[in-house]
Image: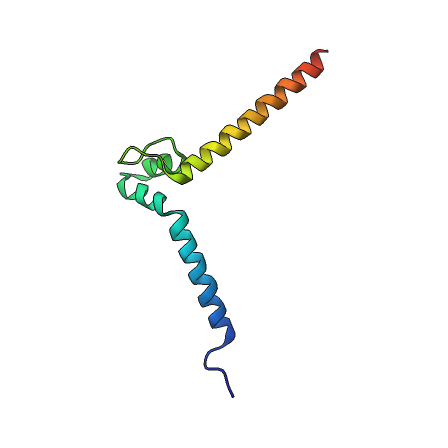
Length: 89
C-alpha cells in the first residue's frame, strides 16, 4: 500500500512546528519589546538591554545577554590581574 504523503513532509511538519513554537516561546518578550520600539535603533537597544521596554522592564533575552557579558568581563579581569601579578614577580 502506498503512503498518502511522503515521509519528508511529516518530518518538515514536525520539525518546523517545533522550531516555530520554540522561537515563539523564547523570543516572545523581544517581540513584545519591538512592538513598542519606534525605530531600528531603539529595537536594537531593547534587544541588547541598553534600553527598557515601555513598561519599564528589561527583556529576559537582554538579561541573559547582560549576565553573559558580566561573567565574561569578570573572567577577563581575573585573567589579566593574575597575569599582571605573575609578570611583576
